[in-house]
Amino acid sequence: MFNIEQKVRGKGRCLTARCNISPGDLVFSEKCLFWGPVQTSGSSICVSCLDGTCMPDPGVCLECGYTLCQTHQEPARHKEECQLLAISGWSSAKNMEDQLLVLTVIRCLLTVRDENMDMMAVRGFMDVARMEWLVKRIVQTGKWGEEEILLATKCVLYNCLDVLGKDGSPLGRGLYPTACLLEHSCTSNTRNIIIGDSLECRATVHIPEGETITTCLVSPLLDVFTRRKELKEKFNLNCSCPRCCSPTELGSFSSALCCLACENILGYFLPPDPADTMPQYTCNKCQYQIPEKLAIKATQELIPIVQEYNMFGIEEQEDFLDSLLTKFHENHSLILQLKLNICKELGRDDYDSLEGAENDTLERKTEFCEELLAVMDIIEPGLSVVRGTLLYELADAIMVREGRHGKDIFEDEDSLENKYEACEKYLSEAMKCLENDRDDKLKQLCMKIKKMRHDLYKVRQ
Image (cartoon, rainbow, N blue to C red; front, side, top):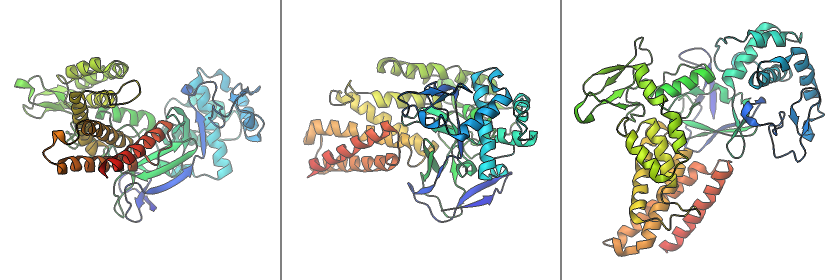
């Protein structure tokens, strides 16, 4: 399905399509070579299997103090880890995050030894700063030199992906050797489905033979500054993909701010090219400029507030949305995130049903879905989870409304049939978006979609 080739630009290797790949096709699947827990995992997670469900009676290793399930309290691998951790003086690291980093780097080094892994094949050759403390500790074990430890640290810091539980929550970070060769793009052509130590890479759009296979390492819903910041911090990458280099972000305007210098706010401040040495946001109408720092501050200050509003009622969220629309483009990252939350909750009762929603609420829900789908076609094209969820919401709103009114609101039966045909198309595509996911909530959503398709089939007979 793919070839491993040298990158045309930059160092390292990448994957290219060996043949034409269709949306939904499995590009590759693999197991994690090693992983380490993260601080948010909680004390009830076994540090060896990262599973909290296998431990009716969790134990604690007497040597290192980490939580272990009964299966992993005795194996030789953990005993070896314990001995190395003790020699490294890991417990005197300044916080739990650093202690877990020592553990994960040691696991990387042990995996290199046991699997004969070539760490030079992983993504990038970046330098790591302020890691002298870690190198000093692990050097004390007498098993590895400074260069090996630094290379393992780079591997852990910049090449590992989040390991997720069945509920989608992060349990740790692990190395998936083929996935780490995927080139990053903020509008990628694949997505990774990760549950535990298993990863599936599936195509989201058609990938022609010879094209580079890409993945998005951060959420495509983020604005350009936040995406590039996270890519730098998590993977030490400076993104120059087509979306990041486009002032309008390929026409999505997902980082655009309203220009208050324009009469009636006709223009929008657009982000600079990543290569600009004196970056300025420039209005696309009046050409007025503001410093990049000012535009970034306007967005960054509101990120935690938008996240907090997701817990408020629909009316409060819609009022806040109206306020944001006076400051940002209607497709700005902050507005997209708020709209997505409103769209999922709008009209639903405590039993997750739309049956009690008024017609104007259902119409508004339909409009939200259609607007969001148009933007997602640009920033996350193809078979994505967000697209599948929106198509489900759209079909549900239409089916409830048309089922309630029947033929009375249409001029002829053909119009009603066209609506139902559109719903079948939405649900069919939603199923394609979600059918390979193993997240418990998405599995439940797939069951709802199957039932809706069955109900729709009976109505159309």
